[in-house]
Amino acid sequence: MKKQTIITILFILVGITGQCQIHYRLEGNIGMPNFTGIMEVRDVLMQQAIDTIEVVNGIISPKEGNLPEMAMCVLADTTKVTVTIDSGSHRDNRLTLGTLFVDNGTIQVEGLNGHGLKQSGTPIGDEIAFFYHRMAEIQEKIDGNHPSPEEESTERKTGMSALLYDVISRHTGDVYGINLLVNEGRWYLDDTKWIELRDKLMRDNGEYVRKAPNLVDDLKRMAR
Picture (cartoon, rainbow, N blue to C red):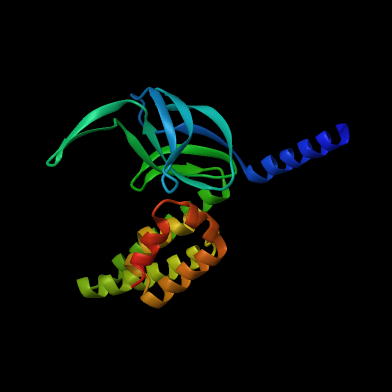
């Protein structure tokens, strides 16, 4: 009986270890020194909170946790306010900041930039920095050529298409690839390349995609 119990415990421990594939540590600052409060780390695709952090004068109190895979998140203030729009009013988070990719290692949040929260310290942080650096190079090249509006549009699409195909091809197994395909790829990739990458993403990461509410339907609708 004792032997069976030990074996059962070992199987449970192996199962738990298999599910927690990444260990993260969040630290740094959100770029808003006047903010103090509790923020949810909210998984955008899975539509759920994965953790909470304390922020004091814009500084994140270091927080560690485990996840089964990388997550694309926003930081949402837990304080709710009433938001009024034409169709009525509703309660919403007072402050929401993003996007933040939570991956294995120490994630250093470095305030805000034009694209949301800036992060470093992990491989995905390096990849994000590479992507924006290449975007800037593409724009610099266009500016140096002084093209007409039509030529500028063509040059940007050509440069961005090559960049996106390269980066997404290396990230069809994680949420960064999903993010780029959905939010950038639909504007710059031609139909053939977009569908090719979508199909590769489904082969490499289909289990995750099928778990995310509405994501499969969204990808089907985007297939032109």
